[in-house]
Image (cartoon, rainbow, N blue to C red; front, side, top):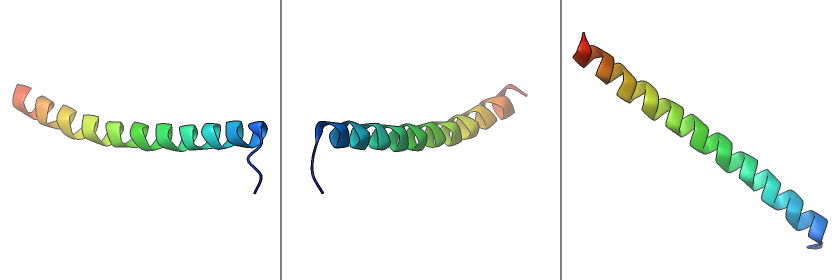
Length: 43
């Protein structure tokens, strides 16, 4: 596999999207748990 400029850019974009989705899902789960606990405490 050649590491051309286009290939490197594609790899960076691909990994960036994967990392963003992973962090987004992880944050969503954490927010759901924290938000649920906060709502319980308020009620």
